[in-house]
Length: 388
RNA sequence: GGUGGGGUUCCCGAGCGGCCAAAGGGAUCAGACUGUAAAUCUGACGGCAAACGCCUUCGGAGGUUCGAAUCCUCCCCCCACCA
Image (cartoon, rainbow, N blue to C red; front, side, top):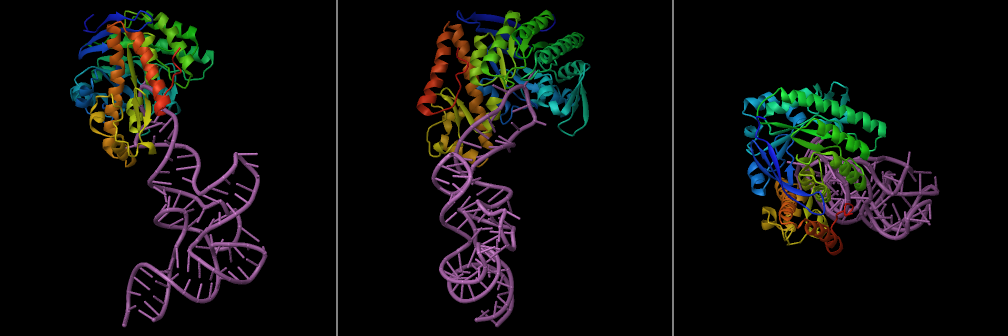
């Protein structure tokens, strides 16, 4: 293989599938488990690349659908590729546009050949195929490309889930073909689906494993299903995933999803929650979620999280942050993104450290113990649905 | 002093005899958000009640009317222009 990509497992938890490892990409080394901030349009909303670096972010996401439409992959390529264009020199992973097949369901038509989207920017018709997605991702010059897939949705009948899954498999094969015709350092990850039928989940992961991608993702989770079904689907998929390869749990999630994902062997995570919910005034802490606009923080001089070392917590009070949100000040978005991303990065970083020390089960227990304390003593919101 | 226009629920502001506890916006309060069409969206917003509903409210006091935020009289206050 001509690319520099490689994945090494360094430590495993004795009591679960959790593991710590290292991912080597053309643009840098990534310790796992890792959380990847989402930068859909070539920017992680409200933060600059130096903020991300300071937070300890190692890989970030971009989005094929959005960047293809604006500003267009050719323009990005002419300006030196996505890394240079957006000023981020670390690894970049792009979602294929597969999530938009789901989230923009009302604005697209699906066929065997591909997806006809009605552009969310100007309404024009654009056609996305598996080959096209790979071509665009390659032109962007990213480190990790994703196959075009279809998220099944919830609920879905078994028949729907199976039909959708099989389309995703055929598209994975086409993406793989398109990728192999290319060159360079970029790698392609396959994505398994299967809805919320554990046997389909397993079959899908097997089918994707068969195609022998450098990494494997589990997609189509957190689509409205209850936690038990989510975890059952993940466990079923995990059974068939090649464990020598990095496993990417797409789109997850809340802190509870991440800790449960790690426990079930996932190495990579991404989610818009820390940035989006942050922009909407929700701060994540070890003790749970804090809605900064709530009247109870009006004169609260404490930082969001006393134990957090981020710039926001080192510098500002809850009262000040509430004031910024009450007035829709732009700084509110940056400060919340900084805090929430730091929380997520610390969460996975802490898990990694614990794994390297053989202390993951304690870390896991403490995670829920903290949330329980936060609920009972501080009245913060959280969920313990995942603790089994 | 004269003429004209106004005073509506926290604020702005519609309503101009019954369908009005009173449009709409803001503020406030609460909630949602999972590979980002999201600095977005939803709900509450006079009081009591689970609910039927009851009570208090449209500057003040009287009055007309089956019925008044809406009509009449007087009073108080604000704005504009003219003296």
